[in-house]
Length: 219
Image (cartoon, rainbow, N blue to C red; front, side, top):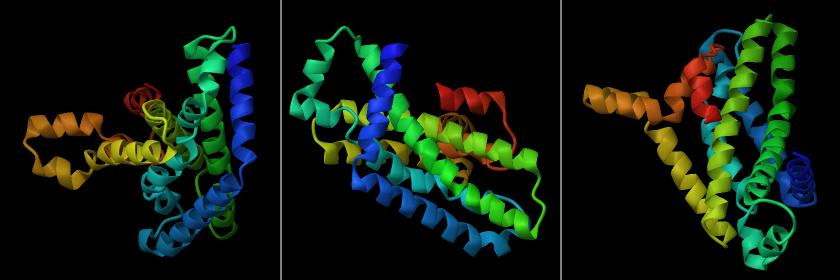
C-alpha cells in the first residue's frame, strides 16, 4: 500500500507540474458550467441533470487527455524499466498510476461544486440526490480512468494512447445509447445495455444508485 500511495502522489504531482493540467481543469469546469446553465431551463427542474447528461461526453476527451502519459511516456523514455527494477511489483505500479490519475479527475469533479451551489441560491435542490449524483459521477470517472490507463499501457506514444482511449470509451458510450438499444433485437439490446456506459449511468444521473451500476463502474 505504501508503494501505491507514493506512486499515486508522484503521479498527481507530475500532472499538476504540467500547465496542460490547469488548462484541462479550466476547460472542463467552464464547459460544464456553460452546458448546465444553457440547458437548465429546458429541464424545468432544480437538478444537476443538465450537467450530468453531458458528462460522459466531456469525459470522453478529458480522461484520455489526462491518462495518455500515465505509462506511455515512461515506456518511451525508458523510465518504466528503471522503476520496475526497484522493489515494486507491476500491480503496485499500475494501481499507483491509476489512483494518481483518478485523484486528478475527482479534483476536476470537485471543482464543479460551484454549479450546485449556484443552483441552491435560486432554488432548493434535494441534497441527497445531489450527493448521489456526484457519487455516480465519481464512479463514472473510476471506470473510464481504468480504460484510459489501459490505453496508455499498450503503446509508447501519447497521441496513440489518446486515440485508443477515445475510441474505446466512445464504443462503450455508444453501445449504451437508448436509440441503439431500442433498434436492436431484444437479446442483442440486453447485451448492449449491460456493456454500455450510458445505460448504467442514466439511473445514476437521476440520483438513483443501483448496486448493479456501482459494480459495473468499479469492475
